[in-house]
Length: 104
Image (cartoon, rainbow, N blue to C red; front, side, top):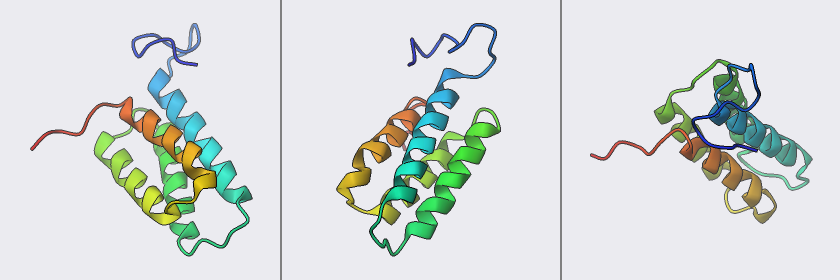
């Protein structure tokens, strides 16, 4: 899907390919979570944070610390549900495209 971080995804498009990757990954996980039949106690938190991630991606270049915070909330909310692991990994990978967290 992405050729490299320095290239645009579509000729003439101004969208950052990292943002496009994030949109795709978040959309996939939202669909998978909506279709998951099990009752998850914190499903609402995961849905809210995925909606926040989608909004951040839709608003241009998101802030990396906020992306990481949302990822932690989503991961904590869905726990170790194996059916959602691949989708969560894709969201994590898309967020990692925005760079590593600062070292303290």
